[in-house]
Image (cartoon, rainbow, N blue to C red):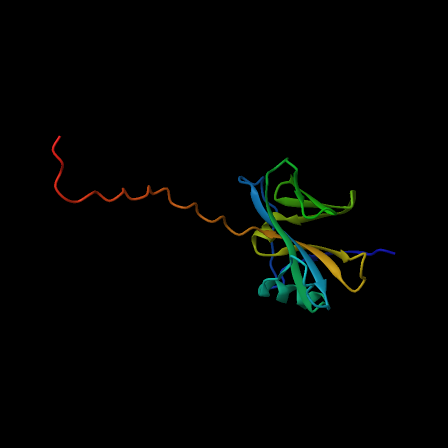
Length: 177
């Protein structure tokens, strides 16, 4: 029997309160990370990376695995009344929407079928809280996968549009014409 775990990590740093609000005036930028949890070593051929220490610490407080590896990280901009699709792997598709004022909805489609739908206040994500979807792997019941949804970091400013300096002039006496 396959068990799907769904966890909403609310305020792992500290308790936070939030309330409803009006329709967001600007889109919500979110980040989704596909993470693998295991007690085993990191596979030599895997293209996964060690998880950032702060997120590793937050997950370790709740879950039992010793190692967490980031498989993929993607960002999405969610606008009211629009559904955004985000493919995390060939088996994992996420659909994001803002169906109500200040409420984020995430649908997890696993292997072509709707597996889970979660809702969380947008304010909670803006305050640094996480929405975590989790489940066991088919290959090894001692491993698990996680999809961690958080507010995306601010975009990096574009490189300045300063034109390159002019080429150096030739020095010396000018040639007569």
